[in-house]
Image 1 (tube, rainbow, N blue to C red):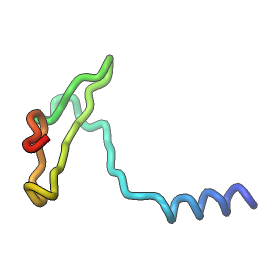
Image 2 (cartoon, helix red, strand yellow; image 1 turned 135 degrees about the horizontal axis):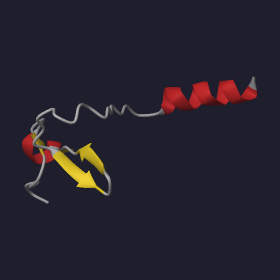
Image 3 (cartoon, helix red, strand yellow; image 1 turned 45 degrees about the horizontal axis):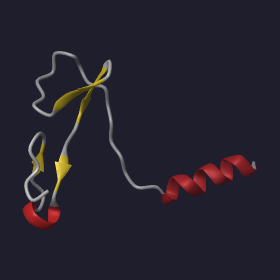
Image 4 (cartoon, rainbow, N blue to C red; image 1 turned 45 degrees about the vertical axis):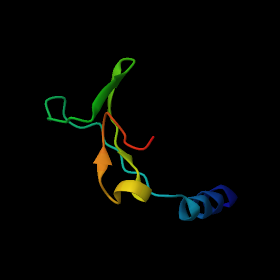
Length: 61
């Protein structure tokens, strides 16, 4: 019971994260290789570019 209560409390305090492995043939300009895995990487600079996302070159960094 204590473990489930702790898990619930921690999940309510956590920030959002969205992830999926995706299809290997799915077109994605933000796909990079890390070891044997291929991941989608997107960076945001809200101070400079509001909600625009970047994959390879990140301005103002």
